[in-house]
Amino acid sequence: MDVLLWITIGFILIGFVVLVSMKRSMESKLAFIKENPESADSSIKSKAIIWWIVSTTAWGVVSIFLVVLVFS
Image (cartoon, rainbow, N blue to C red):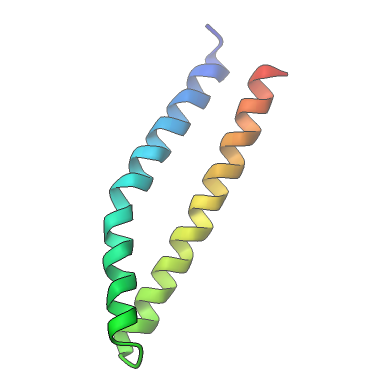
């Protein structure tokens, strides 16, 4: 098989495993923010959630690009 196909499969699988493993942590941070909106830690935790969303979106875009590249 093509090396690019293996890189694509590995990138998608590793990214998915990281995404799922961090999901529970992000849910607990969001629950903390909802309970304590005025806390000083809320700002730090909200930035972590925003960066998690940005990185997840970037992972998705790169994954789509790699899949299109493999099948073109």
